[in-house]
Length: 111
Length: 117
Image (cartoon, rainbow over the protein chains, first blue to last red):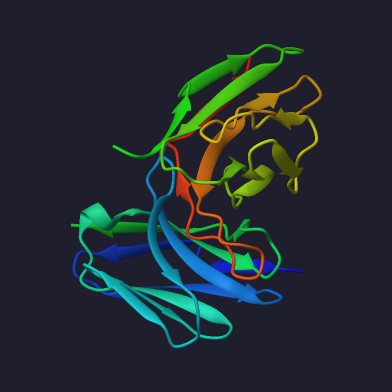
């Protein structure tokens, strides 16, 4: 069964304290792995797409990496405005574009 | 500005009542999706549509219905058969590239929060 597991469930950081969020996946053929940011009461905002192991994408303080079994979202020197829930999703072979989501990691960055 | 518009933002449903959630996109995307989000759970797929006049059930379709008469629109009806409809509903769309390749990233609307009163 295709599955996505995110850890930790919640993460509290001090401003400037770098860390990583993990997304482990089990799928029958990966077509893409997606990272989203979601603020309370809002829809998910697209961040990155990764298609193959070894691929990396960067945007401001965020960097996403991909291996054959997991993805990491590295946050360098976070700021309070980075506080949000980060969602990971995978698109499996033959899924017709549907996404399987993890439960998310809630990040809080304190000043 | 291109994007996905969901309405209303908040919706209240009485017991035994059907309600319809609107989703409109001007991104010219072929594929559209409805997800449900509950506290502590990941997004779960309700229905999806790859082209106009065609749609398929997702993992939790019972108690819901959809239509896809226009490329831009994918309304979701929550029927009285849905026993626990209180949730945050999200509509999304993406570019359809084909079964062998997969679709591009999905873009989401701002959601509709449905509450049973």
